[in-house]
Amino acid sequence: MVQILPDNVNPELLVAFGDTALRKGDPILAERFYRAAISEAGGGAGPALHARLGLTRKPNSRTLPMLDALEAVQRIDARNSFVGEGLATWYKTPPFADDARFLDLADRHANLLPAANWHWNLQTVVWAVRQARPLPGDFVELGVFKGHTTRFVADYLGFRDWPKTWFLYDTFEGIPQDQMNAGWAANNARAYVGTFSFGEVRDRFADMANIRVVKGRVPEVLAETCPEQISFLHMDLNSAVAEVQALDILFDRITPGGVIVFDDYAWTVSAQQRAAEDAWFARRGLHILPLPTGQGLFIKG
Image (tube, rainbow, N blue to C red; front, side, top):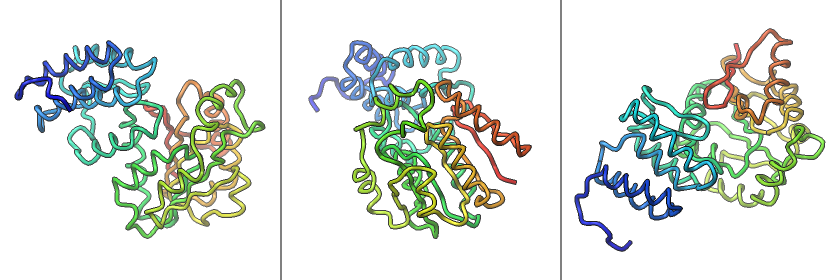
């Protein structure tokens, strides 16, 4: 990197330079300024600075509005503000803010996700997996995409050394036509068709013998290979039909105390999934907890 600034520049000035570069459409230069600011701030780099760094990783039409939102909440709480996809927080203490390992892994794996600053969502899954660890049963993820969530959590928690197996299921070809939510054809084509592959994801987990990547359509593939007991289920199929069919098969396999995280539950674009899952649980006198992250959470009694 060419030296463009003298040493010991005030971090606030570096942030201002980075914001200007980002607004001018140069995320690479903005990233350099933000990383320099983090280095200068040392242990004093707050969550807002890491949020800015995350905005440089996947620049899109939402990047500048998210920077605007971050600047707005910083006027309320300069110290603890954070902005992620669909979520701005202030007057909260992000649990990852002082966790160097969490921040490093989130940055390292950010290229696997089309959304910026997934930190709060990852924090939810980390909590759920920790809760499920001492319980009987293996882990299941339905809807893998590029493997971002599982790879992050497995690295962060050292899953390779756990006496459990994590099963990852996906068609790796997009959502089947007969399972697609109404109005989702364009989303499916843009996000899932031809953007990733089974081989790519399988190879991503090749160093972890206790993670199995399974290609197939849910729910049919569950009849071919599926753990008898499940202590953690991550539901991310982006399909109301497929997710309800999966619940029909897997719910009774979830051990008492087991956790289900619904990745899309409270997102506006996933309203059909929420309605179908609310109805499924209501018939059993149960309820999913909607989270501000857009996820849904259920703990089996």
